[in-house]
Every structure is written in structure tokens, then in C-alpha cells.
Amino acid sequence: MSLIESICKNIYPLDTRFMEQAQARQDRLIKPQGSLGKLEDISIQLAGIYGSKYFDTTKKIVLSFACDHGVYEEGVAPNNQNITLLQSMNFPKKINGVGTISKFVGSDVQLIDVGINCDEPIEGVIDCKIRKSTSNMAKGPAMTRQEAIRAIEIGIEMSEKYIQEDYKVIGIGEMGIANTTPSAAIISVIAGCDPQEVTGMGAGLKKELLQHKAQVIRTAIEINQPNPTDGIDILQKVGGFEIGSMAGVILGCSANRVPVVLDGFISYAAALIAVNINPRCKDYMIASHYSAEPGAKKALELLGLDPFLKMDMRLGEGSGAALAFNMIEAANYVYKNMLTFDEVDMGM
View 1 (cartoon, rainbow, N blue to C red):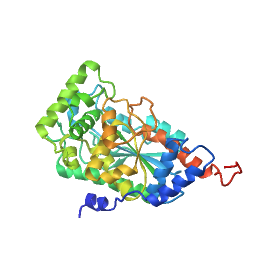
View 2: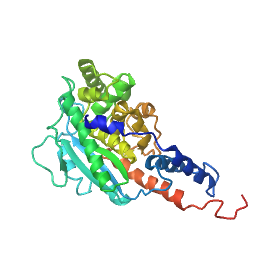
View 3: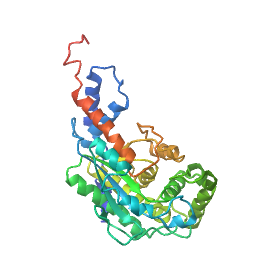
View 4: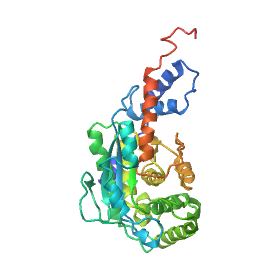
């Protein structure tokens, strides 16, 4: 049995017994029922994930994955590809976006290299390189099926490594110039829509080049004919190694009853791959924020998720997931520490 098959056999529905207990406590807290909105929803979901009425959410980490993309040569990104390498060097120093936010919220960050276009190892970055960059999906499959499987397996292995180190909440992020192109392709395939509907500027592509980017995606889909019902086939044909690894983290967290916090647009694509492989993993996801990418709405509708932050962010890296950690901690703190009507004489 493969690692993916094995992990999927261990993904179970949320524990409704503890969700009912959490709901009952929320209903007795000294406030109108439902008045804390999504803060209440988060605590109830967490009770179902952890299988416990009370739980600890203090030890948190963002697992980010870095990869370059062969489709870069089609002119779909405004920045030089070597920025993937240069920015990856900043993750261990915590001086980039996700790093500084993580320092503020008390979270750890770990970057994993699954396909940076370089030979040298990067200090502080875990080397799981599948190969240097995916292939150009506009000319053929982005990777082999075995490479797609390996990308997912790396994510599963990384999630289990940090769960064994007692991390209670895991966020996902990425680094890779041109990775909004495969992300839009994945969403387009699964949604059955034209790429133009879900293609955005990414890291700053000029508006006049958006049609070109959409056409590149359209060509890639036409050439490769990914099967919309086979998540691994979609990943192989038009995906990225880092997208596969984030999908693997989602599957790994779900099987180990640990919440996984999505970041933005690229993580939505990874989530769609994970749900395509095992729909039950959706229950273990917490969507952090609405990405500013135009395809975000479509992807979130497909996932049935409603993020609790709207910050017009499109940085990636895991920055939105890290920012959401404080909201998750706040939800848990209120849930545990607000008194109930039974504990306070309020005549109710």
C-alpha cells in the first residue's frame, strides 16, 4: 500500500460528540448565542478535529515549500526566477513576510526545498528537492506521475515529522516565481472554467499580459488533458512540486487530527488537489484569508470554505496562515476562559 493510500485510510469525519459539547459550552457563555460568530465556529471545529472538549493551540508552525516552474519561460511572471532562491534564503532568518508575521504571533516557520532551480543547499532549509524546477507545462506535463506522488509524500512526511514534535496547529505556505500559473490551471481544470476567469497578476504581472498568461494556461490544459477527477493526474500535468507538498500536508494533518491553516491562492489549489484525493480532509482545513487573486472566489466556492480575514493580501509564503494563528488562539482563549451563565449569577 502506498503512503498516500495509507494516510487516506486514516482520515475520519470530525468527532461530533465533542463538537456538540463545544457548542453547548458556547451556548452557555455569558453572551448572546452566536454573537461571537466565527470565533465560535473555530472552537467548535477544533473540538471535532482534536476529538476533545478542550485543546491546546499554542505550538504553531508554518510549513512552506519552495519550487521553480518550467512555465516561467513562457513569460508569465514579471520577476526573475532567481528570486525563488534569494527569498528562500530569507525564510530561516525570519526577515521576509511570513517570517516577520510569525515572530509577532509566536509561530515557527520551516521552508522545504522541493524544486528550487539551484544546486547548492540552503542553510536552514530542508532539502527534499525532487529536481530543479518542474517542466514547462505549456509544452508537456509539468512532472511525471511518480514525481507528483513524491511531492505529496514529502508533504505527508513533513506534517508527521512536526506533529511528532508536538505542533498543534500547522499552516501551509510556498515560495516560487510563476506558481500562480499552475495554481490557476488547477482551479480551471477542477472548476471546468476558462482560465481567463481565474487568472490574476500574481506577484505583479502587468494587466496587458494577463490574456497571454491565460492563453498559456489554456494551451497547457489542451496539450496535457488532465483528468479533473484525478488529483494526482492534475498535479502531474499542470501543477507544481510545492503545490503537491502542501496537499500532502493537508492529508497528513487530517489523518493525525491536527488542523491545517490555508494561506492564499496557491494553497487553495493545493487544497483542491487534497480534496480531490480525499474529500474528508476539507473538514480539517481552516481558511485564513481571502486572497486578492481573482480566482480565489471560485476556488473557495469549490472548497466550501469561508475565510475569516479579508486583507487584500497576495504575498503567499504562508503569511496569511501565520496571521490567522492569532485569531485561532483568540477563539480558543475565549472559549476556555469566558464564564458561563451557570458560573455567574445573571438571572438567566
